[in-house]
Length: 274
Image (cartoon, rainbow, N blue to C red):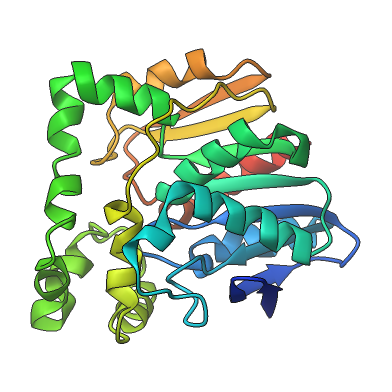
């Protein structure tokens, strides 16, 4: 069973789900777009039952009380600072970090810049940012897959995604996420300003510096039917991890790994954490 939690930080209170004993080994799980902390509900519950203290927050823009209006307040540096601020508020000096989709990108940045805070890193779907940047320069397949990034910077995106009972937003999940969960995501992102805040993650200026290599033990999980991230960046990610590295490829699974194959992912995570 999961519980609801409020994590008070200088930026404001983040909503979260959590499970496990207060003194359990801490694991923080970062969701992607257009989801929320509940995307990790299965993993949080199982990790909690195994004695870990697992916490999955609704991140900046997704937690209503941490939803600044200005696009510049959603840059990667700020999102990474949120991770450390939440860990500090939870009194975690070191912790295991997991992330999916753009939450995985934030996890990569956190691991690269603050390795002393992490025991391990688990990233699902999103390749190392430097591997993705290289693929965007050299791989036509990845260029086509990432075309949405340009589209989402257009300010008409919110209206288009939410039109006709959020038809476009619902289609993103490729019918691989339970309809009731999709309904919940749509409900949350239909709140005033919520979808704009979520899209501001993509609209904020990106860091011009190249992400460092990651030295903490890393598990990277990529699925062959992922529409956003192709094999070039996925296979190249190994070059950007200097610590112990495990690459797991899931056949016939789409982008929505945590909710599409929750048992498979959770088993991989527990093995990695062990």
